[in-house]
Amino acid sequence: MAVRSRFLRAGSCLNWHAEANLSGSARFRPALTVRPPSSASLSRGVESRSFARRRYKYFLLPAGFCLFFLTATDSALADNWLASVRNAALPSHFVAVDKARQSFLFFEKKSPLKLKYVYPCATGQQTGDKRKLNDLRTPEGVYFVEYKIASGLNFKEYGGIAYTLNYPNPVDRLRGKTGHGIWIHSKGLGIVPRDTRGCIAIGLENINEVGPSLTPGTAVILAEQLDEKRIPDRDDGAARQLRRLMAQWSSAWAARSRKMFDFYDSEAYTRAMPESFTAFRQNKERLFSTLKFIKIYNSEIHVLEGPGYWVTWAEQLYTASNLSTEGTRRLYWQKDGDNSFRIVGMEWIPRDTGMRADFRKGRLVAETASLATDASSELPVPPPLDMPETPEESPLYPESAKNPPGSGSRPEASLLTQTSPRDEENRVVEYLASVSADISSMLEQWRQSWESGRLDDYIRHYEDNAVQQGRWGAKNIRRQKEVLWARIQPILVRFSGMRIVPDGNPRQAGGRNGARGGPCVTVDMNQVYADSSGHSDKGTKTLQLCPNDGKWKIQRENWIALPPDPRAEQETALPSN
Image (cartoon, rainbow, N blue to C red):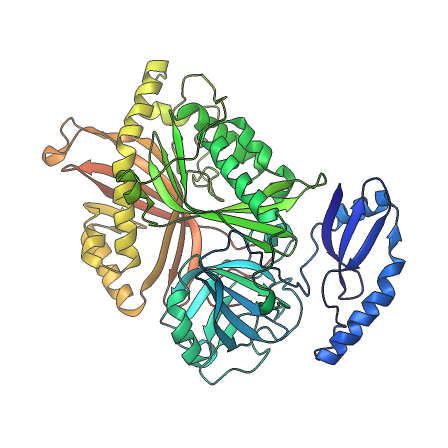
């Protein structure tokens, strides 16, 4: 069985593809057209291929040495990546950027795949893969459009429109890359090759033409070289295998089976994700023992190959005994020492995909839960009840909370009673399960009104005497937003990892003004925010929600921003590249 890896040869920009046979020696061959760092011409590229042919024959090493070296260089960069786009599991459309030719290509899948647009573009001032903040390089890999910025931009630098990408992705973090703010944008004064700080720039007319197709989730392949005449290339079997693996992973998840965890590379996951694999697994096992059922509905699964990794993704509807939600699920895969694909990172992007509507009309078929469940038969413990797996689903309580849900003292159980007998535990869980759907719906309406700047709808979700970050009363909250939104408009509000915990402030039976009875609840969740000024931040949003006249309303709102990454400057929405 062959072990395959890509690595960067020290002291040069030669990117080699290694094949090590377990029973024999290893041989190395060039993985792409090799060019000296100072060469940009086609003629020098031809010379480099001759150079590669003359040199690779000397790389004959014992298999044991090769296996050790390949493991040690797992974090290698993707310098001079030659992209391969296989003819299997392709999305309906995607972007490919050829850095060597400074070309932007837009493909559309309409039986067969067609090259719809080709534009000249500009990428980073320095060649090679992006390594760190402000290195003036454009990253190489598979990325996805996040959202559109249509105001507040410096026209000379960015034109009037920009589309943000999800750099760094989990594999980038696994490889120790830093930086942020990689966009597709235009330029107010024309395009000059290799003239950006790491973004991809195209002409004003070009971005107006292709922009409507750059919807959130559009795949973007950034490579040193690609040959559009060979797109799509013949599938080598990896795409079909990865589609099966993602379906099997979904089935294990739906079955609440611990076999789900066998799909992961635990060490790589811990390095790539905000939480450790141990914390991720413990949280999932608690959910498996608490939830009565989980159903997973996937749309068509897509696959693209990056430099030393693969990405699978699908629109997904998650429904369980506590809530349902929909969005896009991405899994990042690498091969381990046994040449088996393992998940090293994940992304979950909540959004309206239309799958919930199809589900209600009976048009969806759940992933087959063919695996016998091994979920614990123990009685459920009090919360957490949360969203499905996300990259940021570790407990979201503020740092000042000494006993978050799941800790040994279980303080949330005492919010309703000073004792915690099993019947009380069941009552708490049943209550939260009964209200979580209404709370999720209310929070989504609040999020949409905030993101779109609809002030009247936004304020309707607050109690008259609500407190928001020190501002008392809905009137004062409204006044502050009127002044702020007149200058700066919100353009992105995203929540994930929601948790609901009973609060210690129960309303009287029947509630105020005839509202339904039951206690208030505290909701914690991850929040990502961006506005038209270019500002963005991430952190933990904590809300106290209370029932009032049959509706859940915000009584108190607090926000704790994440501290800046010690490896880089604090992230902003403006490109730092």
